[in-house]
Length: 483
Image (cartoon, rainbow, N blue to C red; front, top):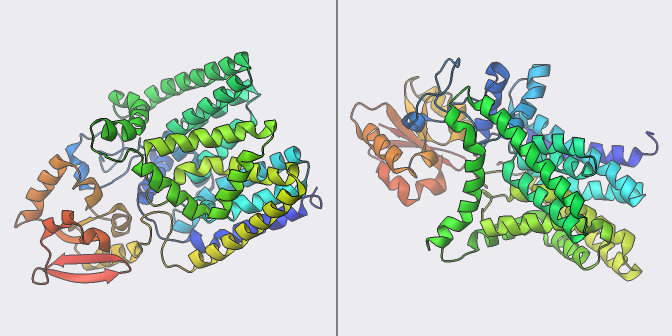
């Protein structure tokens, strides 16, 4: 067994080695909210978290949590947080960056194992299976997502691939669909639509109806679970999943129907451009070739890919600097690319081989460059210094001092703060904050934000100048402390 799969085991070692330099990267963007949520799932069973003083416009909804927070992380569906929390609960792990990112990467590693054994069976070639694993695992896109504390690139991609593998096993499909819907609602629905479309095209109407009813039954069971789950906080939160799904479609329809967005697909165009940048033109060209030359066995892969691409293109989310929403289709795109070496003519095989070789060279070169950068590529692209800034403020200021900042810096500050991103964009919050900030007796004493935010019109509000503030810079983070 070991000898037969020796090449794959060597590749697994390479995969693990390729992630090492990214595991200890500082937390960025909303990652601290995931960390704090998981900590409280482990300790209290529910994802309470502190996300800033700006949430004081909400009622207290936690029970049994010592700090009486008014924030509970329902924006991340519960099964994502539960699945991450299991290793911490079982093995009593610490919550350092290295351990947390390693846990997330573990889910992606399991994905590669399932991908390899499925490919071995499908292609009847261990070499092609290993080649597929190498392509997907060395992608800078997948490497960055493997260590990002987000849903799409690790947990969701694994479970949606499992959903595909068990499409003919209805009991298993029901359970895995239930888990997937509790990890991310909208993408799971897109996969359900893909499966139904596939069976309708193949005129397997009974199978399409069975998959539809199984999916809907699974969703119904999830809502029953979610009802009892939210009773802990507030029974009115029972319909949060429907609000999340509605918000997805509102991302497209609201700005378009109200003429707030003159370019219907501007967000989608940005998303596609970013996807090409992260995966390389070689990868895209190879997939486009696979669209022209594909077998009936690969039809479902293409339906999954195209429905997900078209949906997110139309919705127009820009992906917060990295188009992570496309992560679940990467295994299927890779399968379609590897299938070219099995199905196509000799001249096309040679062209595909050299394109794959060029892709692998680009991947290795890009990953080496990324590993030397001082910042995380996962979110807030190009910014760094969150940890240094937070720790500096912690040592510099008094315990009761409040900082205007972002979650990544507030996490390392370990005291009260206002999340500027969640403050200035809400009129009522900004109004309340304005009164407190301009009060002579205020304990809001510092502002710490990325440089590009300090140059925006929104931050003119602080009236920062050298007479009133002391300045300190860490990486791309500018700190201004009131004199």
